[in-house]
Image (cartoon, rainbow, N blue to C red):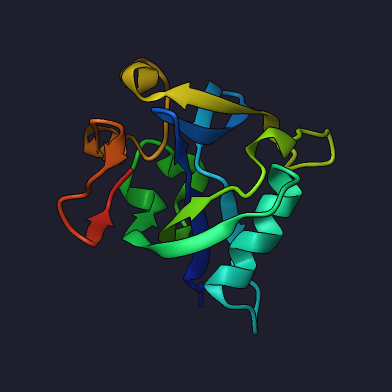
Length: 153
């Protein structure tokens, strides 16, 4: 029996830019929001604090829930590699007490190659995942059509 993985991600917007993790795999470069899988006994807030320390090497202040999305791998472009993967992501508005302290080190995720502030006006031209959220970045803000986005990528 396969399990559903829960995860928490940080939506950090500052000066008309969104903070993203720059990743590379055999398909090329792509960007995702900071965060990752929740551990047993860990709250989503604690997951985000731990994951952001691992990925961007700085503290985050976790705010309100922005949206929830599911990712059922067999239904999307990476279905060959993700056919048995099902994740529920809880994405929270976050802020950085010290935005200048962001650091990337090679000890981060094996596919992570950097950390980048992406200008919101450039987001459409980047391979940013999940691509389904790109239209919700408007006027320097993020405004989802619903708190639950469903199974999207």
